[in-house]
Length: 270
Picture 1 (cartoon, rainbow, N blue to C red):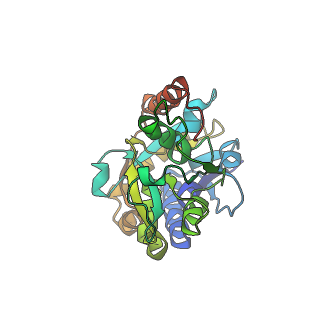
Picture 2: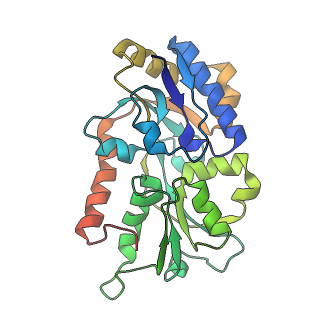
C-alpha cells in the first residue's frame, strides 16, 4: 500500500497547496519512500484524514494526537520563520475580528458571537477556551451570547467574521501568517485582538504501516530540508526555517489546558 502525504491543515490557498506539494514530493524522493500527495477538497474533514491507516507524512494537530490511545508515529515538527516564533517549534492562536469593525480588544467582542472550527482543534477551540478562562467571573460565567460552529475548517471561521455572522474567531496564527503571504487581500480584512500562549507546532506523522526504517528516512529528509538549496524558495513560501525532531511530551500541555478549563467549569466555549 502506498502511504499518503498531506498538508491539508495549512493548504489555505492554491499557492500554498502547490508549495506543500513541492515540499512533500521532495521529502518523498529524498527519503526514497513512495508517497501519494493528497490534495483534498472541502468538505473532506481532517478527522477522516487522520483516521486513515495509510498516513505517510501528514500534518496532524497535536491536540487530537495527544488524545489518541494509539498515536501515529511522530516524524518532525516545523519551526516557523517569522520572528514572533522565536526560532522555536511553536505556534499561537490569534483571535481575529473584522479590520473595519468596531472591536479593538477581545473584551469588546464579549456579549456577541464567537465562531470556531471544531472542538478537537487546539488552535481553533482548546487554546481559545483556555485563554478565555482569565476573563470569566462569578457574575460573568458566559462570555458570548452565541457560539457559531462547528465550521470544520479555519478559513470558514475567518469568513464568518468577515461576513458578520460572528464577531470574533480563534484561528491558527501560523496559518494566518501564511494567509498574509499567500492571500493578503483576505488577511488584511481581519485584525488580531488577542493572542494565546504558545503551543507545540503541528507535527508530521506516519501510521504503523510505514516501517521504522522508512520513518527514519522521512525524518532525516525533513531535518535536512533547510540545507537543500533547491528547496529554499519553497520553505520561504511556507514560512519554515527548518524542521526539528518532535518531543512527544511537549503535546501534553494541550491536555493540561483542556483539563484546567474543564476543572474550572468551562468545558465548552460560551
